[in-house]
Image 1 (cartoon, rainbow, N blue to C red):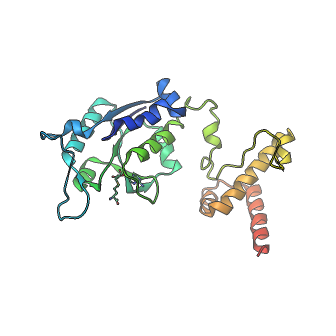
Image 2: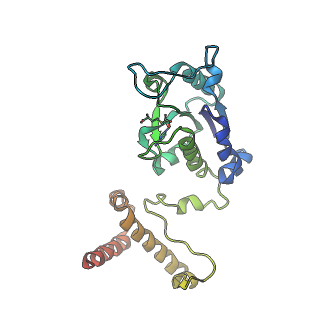
Length: 252
Ligand SMILES: C[S@@+](CC[C@H](N)C(=O)[O-])C[C@H]1O[C@@H](n2cnc3c(N)ncnc32)[C@H](O)[C@@H]1O
């Protein structure tokens, strides 16, 4: 996989190329990153990448031309057909399904904005998709781009030490993950749930499934609705959820 990032701060991306799972995967050659600084594509003597907004108002707007030239250079340098994705609070919220789709592609070209905005004509003419990492605004697209890269790279075969890990994470089966415990058996007078010490694999699997269902129902009931609609819940899941709901109704 090859990712190209259009960014005024290429060094920030050391965070994903040098550390943790994404760093190891990068070292092993599972993915490559090339950064393109729009400043290198500016045409004036000051290497300008921004200017005041037409119509007035606060802040500066990123010029379309250096960004368009940087995107063109990134396109030419990597495999064809990769989507150009601008990180933007106005984009589609990033979710597990899109992350998995992206992990199946040969890569992407990510555009990290800065300042007040990117000239709309650049977005309209050169960007395929806008992606948001939440309903809040950060100062630049670099951290959101790195979140996307991290989420995608950990899905690549061989990126995680245990290939089963991504399949056990929240959202993989439509539900939130179950709680996890490690040593000691008792921490601040709280013991580990007994079933986890039983060595009974079927019971452990059932307990984990039920804990996932419980956490999802309590924290993200919207996901339960979706999992039901997508046929991800079997009869035993449905019975367990019905019991939980009945219990919750009884409590004030
Ligand atoms: C200060 S923000 C601009 C926000 C813009 N004025 C708005 O309200 O839509 C600068 C850059 O940060 C990035 N950014 C900020 N919040 C984001 C979010 N929630 N998701 C993805 N990117 C974001 C985008 O690349 C954006 O161009």
